[in-house]
Image: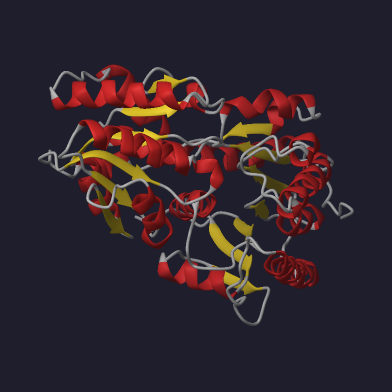
Length: 414
């Protein structure tokens, strides 16, 4: 029996400009699905690309369009492309601001990113129950100035925009009354408390993954020594990855690696330079089932990233019972604990040595995962558990309002 219809939730999603989804988009879609299953009525503020995404994923609810046409594809790494994106986001923000009368005081409003074009309309709306998500802490001004974080590009404009946007968004949202700031990584909480948020206003609704999909795939014959999933960016440690694969291939003539994702055109030059053309297989874009089949057909997952905010692909590798070697980034131990093998950042020689050691053990069949810890990890970070925590947050906001019946509709300044 379908659940009784509850309040309406407006998701402000002005940052969606294509139907190619990333980690934050998956998180939003999963939470929206969980709210619909719990009986909440859904409405989405966003552009034409968002509407296509909603239709493709068969989410219930209406879409309040904040643009007329989908933004043309641009080079996001170029200055002209970044300016074009800013103009497009500003256009959607302005239209959202003009449509805020569609949000009633008894509704929920959820900014699905920490960017100004989502948070400011949510904060200014009449909804008495407000939510915002923090997926990643922006680089500090010093890190931007000196390129002290690998996700800061040479132009620095995108990073500066993110820094200023997050600062404005957190400051604005902090002034709201009945609110919850969702954060995806346990390490974020202390810093948010220092920024002036009360513990009761914070809610841990982490990133997640689908361990059940991996469980549907039977054990596979090992076709590949190493698996890797990712995108080609300096923060992903591509040079270290290729150097490590070349190191392993020099020791094992029959060495094979599977690369998952639409990165072949970008990685082919790296592979040719490293002499790996006969050792790499590119799977391209694959279904979830095929992704986990390929992971289960591999012996080892390498993660030489120089910066991550969570590590979803590591979670997927663990779901496939695959051993993982990674640099010990600050984000990993609070999430993965002792489930993966850490290497001091960014010691390439030690990374190669650890990869060789783990691969030899895997080929010999000597790897024994901590089944109890792995089971606990899967239960904690499965999307079902994450979704349940989100619905609990929605319920807690309603409980808070019921204890403060005289709470006025909010109209916060942008």
